[in-house]
Length: 88
Length: 351
Image 1: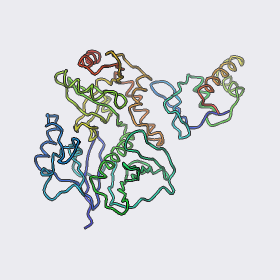
Image 2: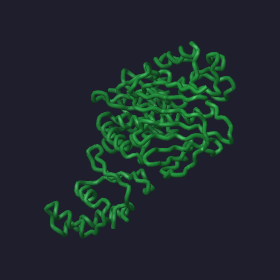
Image 3: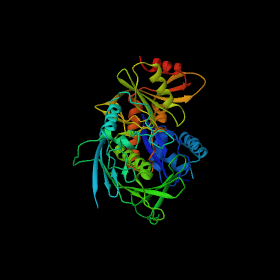
């Protein structure tokens, strides 16, 4: 799976946001607020194919966290992103 | 006879020139009209909205009727730039952008143009295209034919406005001015953003030395709210009723008047420090609450033209808005169109 094209990561009012700006995206009103780990993952995997496994791998490399915890966090994040329709 | 006249302006610290090629020129004004323009520009009260002879609706400019126009000028080939007069400056070598008004030509069509966006929710309808970084706007007239084309260079410093002939008929200045004015606003929006100066859809009043800005979608009542202040809060003045420009000077946020003020001819070449920005919402009560951080940013960004297809412009817009949201008190106000709304607002934002 991949993140849909057209998002720009911006630092706004001290937070990291994914802003929909590309022509291919239809709903421009929604910005996505990213916490530290989701911001890290987004920037790592922007434009690339990933799986829940590869995301968890990246988290474990960067942070001191148990693999099961990383994987369950990743599954939750991916589920959220799928729900708002930005994963293809 | 081929001739070109060049006119210089400065709006919100952004300098630009407008180069007008024959057969077009700019109207010249009688002393009466110039006097009215000067009075209005200094904030003194002017007469009720002037009406051009033969108009059904009040004109948006200061020109009252034909006999006030200097002898020798006509409206067929001369544009009425009176709303720009308060911003006129001396010629200078360095301008931030220039716009050339071209002689009428035939429609070059859309070959080689990549479609970016069709804008058909508000008048005038236009379609934006890209040609190797040059932005091309094609404006539709009342009968849906394309009446004018605007091309803006990739760095937003040069623009050309092409009035289009339809059926070989000449294109009068008065018929095309609306699109020329919109084009100037568009080029200004792009170029000013690159200098961290943002055009914003807002109605602005000045009271007690500072500016209070009212935001909201068209029809929400920004203009109404400003006029309630003018009526019920002594010492209030109108700065701009539709499209002022925001910018920081030495760390303080200022709002400036522009030649673009919607239906209210309030064209004031002045900059005032911003006290507060209030996003209005129609409701059955008058209530103000503070907006912070991203909530303030969201209110602001919905009042600014999101130029998503031009990355540098968008980068500047978002970073400047983020800074504004963090530096100036922002509020959301539920309001009624009554005197109490002005008083409630004032009590909340002026301490």
